[in-house]
Length: 220
Ligand SMILES: C[S@@+](CC[C@H](N)C(=O)[O-])C[C@H]1O[C@@H](n2cnc3c(N)ncnc32)[C@H](O)[C@@H]1O
Image 1 (cartoon, protein in one colour):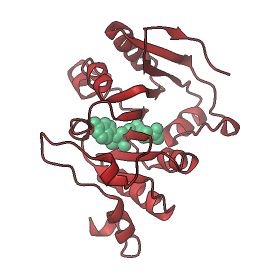
Image 2: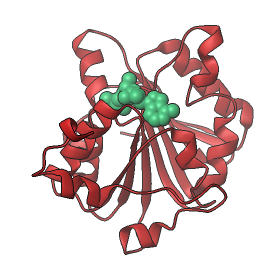
Image 3: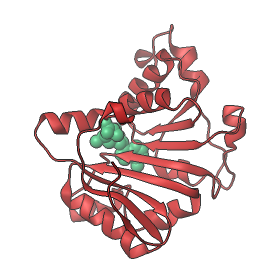
Image 4: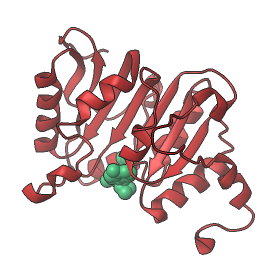
């Protein structure tokens, strides 16, 4: 993609790009980052605004940002490189291809915000949060690891909450319509959340943690 990457930034982008191991082999987080640290993945980074802010806010964490659309991927990768964020690695491709290579029990946080809701029946298998998602992610999360979910599509919110409740063994936190993220509390707004709020749409979400199936009240 030569026109998407100017020569001045290309080396810094490529330095942060990961190559997936062959099918059947797993990523080695400590080799990727050169240090043990809490590990997060964001799927569908879009232009990377959220990822860059979150990685700057949590310098002791390590992040992999995944985006399949080249235009958005390179926007995100350039943003990460320009911000000199060395706790981020990037990968362009399909979420599932990366998730299949994450070692079981190794992931502390999974973000996927404003993931395409695919409202048409024939497209619903394309959703990131479908019925296969809770069983997959529960194998990858470390104890106390969490899934962070946000959307402006209330039907998708309701379906996704139901998926986790039906699966059982997940504690759901901060479930429902969400207030505007508060930077004073370390909360970062994503590009799509900003657009949704500017257009007057409500934002819904929750955090899901492996537990005893409790519905926990909103914190703060
Ligand atoms: C609606 S945008 C939201 C972007 C960002 N999360 C935000 O909140 O501003 C969804 C993004 O997820 C990407 N995406 C959707 N499904 C994906 C998948 N299965 N694997 C990788 N990227 C995906 C799309 O290309 C798109 O850029």
